Image 1 (cartoon, rainbow, N blue to C red):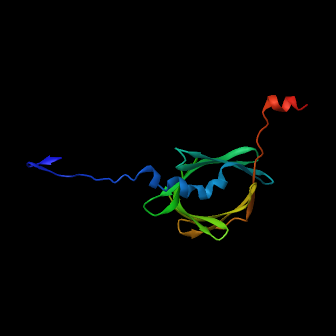
Image 2: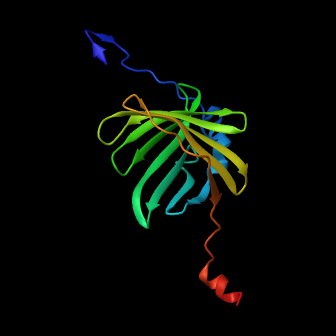
Image 3: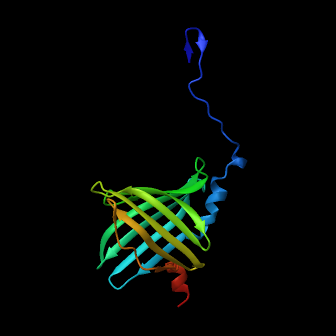
Length: 177
């Protein structure tokens, strides 16, 4: 902008060439999450799907929790490379109005997501989620260090989550009979 006869710079941005951007290459570390996954308990079912979006720069996870056949909660998690921190970051939103964000890091065979946020009724919350890739069709998950409004909450058991088999295409299934 020009002020008192002089040109002043209000903002400068350095755009790295596409071949120098690390977003996609860093995100590939979590490609094993892509697909449809399910955890079936005695009276609950947790389903999540994960897909690559926005030119491969983000993973989008959608989840649904059903208890006794009724949807109890749903939400989304977006995962992407944060060039400011040099880490993978997640933004989480649920159907009750809660939200959080956190950073992913690898710890041995585990991927750890430490997140902080706000419950739907305005209380602070934090947790650590531990994901372990077991094989192409299996992972485990556990929530630890859960706090709501500064009060420690019980963590979860280790939960085994399996990849859902693809739904058969009707024409192909009919041809096999």
